[in-house]
Length: 194
Ligand code: IMP
Image (cartoon, rainbow, N blue to C red):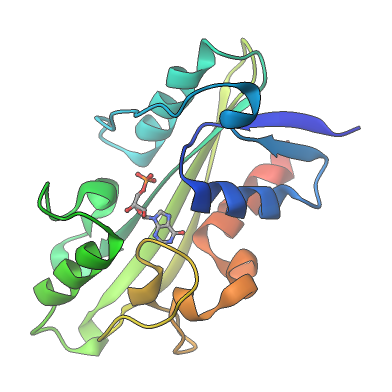
């Protein structure tokens, strides 16, 4: 039997990836739009990825009795003491208008840092809550480096500047991202316990 989960996000890229990652499971990812919920702008005031993911769940909870899944992700750059981390979505402040500008900003900050010292972690934290029951949290991490320049046309967000240990950026991967990404690892960990 296929069971439905509401994905608490208005990010179409994450939604596509989630649908894909759950496609061979017994769970079906449903978007807010599909059940008539308008996109919600959830403020991320938590002090951890998990808290932010739970805030996303709680924003959608009044609209559905379906189990709700949320994802909070970020990139942690060692040379920047782990920044932007949980602030990845807003990194650079209000004058940054899109992902391309955000990536350029991050590359500029690392201008003087040699490749060897540009290590970074891509992190996805997933939370799922069933009606009236406890929340399950799982995470996935991928190690890599911030590339010397932006490369690749696939993916979204920080993908073009996150270089994997095989030398490709996440945005150069295409569908292989769904096998090795931080989000893929977090979904695998979650499916193990669902
Ligand atoms: P949030 O999880 O919606 O708060 O997003 C965190 C930030 O990380 C946003 O700037 C996203 O674009 C970015 N991000 C989240 N997941 C990915 C990913 O899989 N690849 C690249 N960037 C991502």
